Image (cartoon, rainbow, N blue to C red; front, top):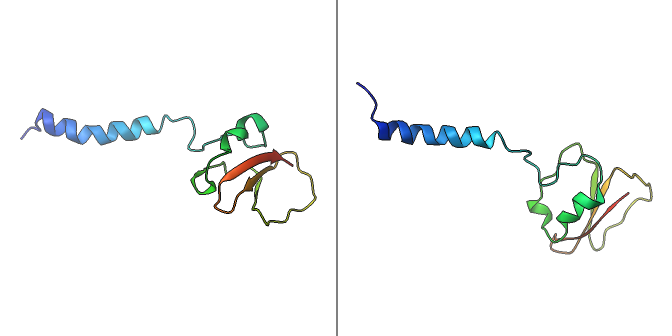
Length: 93
């Protein structure tokens, strides 16, 4: 029994989608692994719950009533959030 062309097309389409998905540049919104003001500025205006950053990027989130340590780390991304989790600004340090 041979498979019909329609059946082969329907079975092959999901495999094609998976293969093309593997070609994506990065699963992260910003791929920089160190703080980069020019790249991370694109996060402003987005909700923190919808942002995907590399796991090896040092980062911290500071809310409206949040406290920060004074240690300076130029590779760390600091994201300032409003009360609803929207990123209002970003900085390195």
